[in-house]
Image: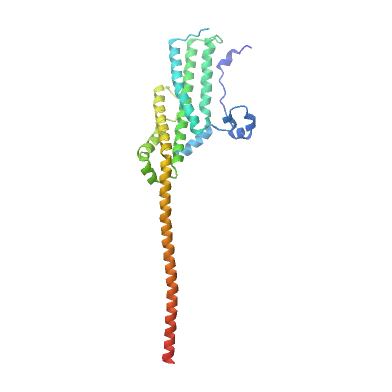
Length: 60
Length: 231
């Protein structure tokens, strides 16, 4: 099979995960990563929310 | 087939490999820290691999491009691994702080000062400093001039925090034991205080009853005597 010449310079799309959907349809992901199937991932949006919350914590 | 690289290309591949070694160590620690996978650095590594394969596409003869193209793509590989490393440093410092917070909450100041004298003067200021020193490059995708030396400094700060987390884990049983002992002593004190309060109330109550009875008797006698005098 030949490969299109310009395929090399095309950018890949970022991985975007809907954690809620992932947990809801966990059975569909049972052949893949266990961590993914369990929804044990942190997305960029979740991290930004966590970051604000954790920054405001005052260490006892 | 033997692939050959120019001196500049070889140097860049060396730098990428060195940077990746930091990324990998941080990645393993980050997954152990929260038992979760963080998506943004995975995206960066995916993109860096794509740029690396563009280099190999030329080296393996799938594509015809010049040395400038190779250098640009090797730079892009470095930049993506660099961003992935900063994403992880950012992630680690945040969750390290939360881990320390969760571990230490519930202990009184007295317990911490007695059992863990280094906590307030050394560890808390270092954690705060670390949160400020590792810059928020993730939001700023323009990383300017990537510098592996900066990465080394931030990795060493992160390692220091890892050591503090280990130290806190080591002290944790002693903190729990001391706090339980103090709580028990406080409960005994409270119990004694309550006992004295109950005793005070009982005495006051009984005194009131006795006082009432005595008052009634005296009153009765008084009325009787008045009756006799007037009678």
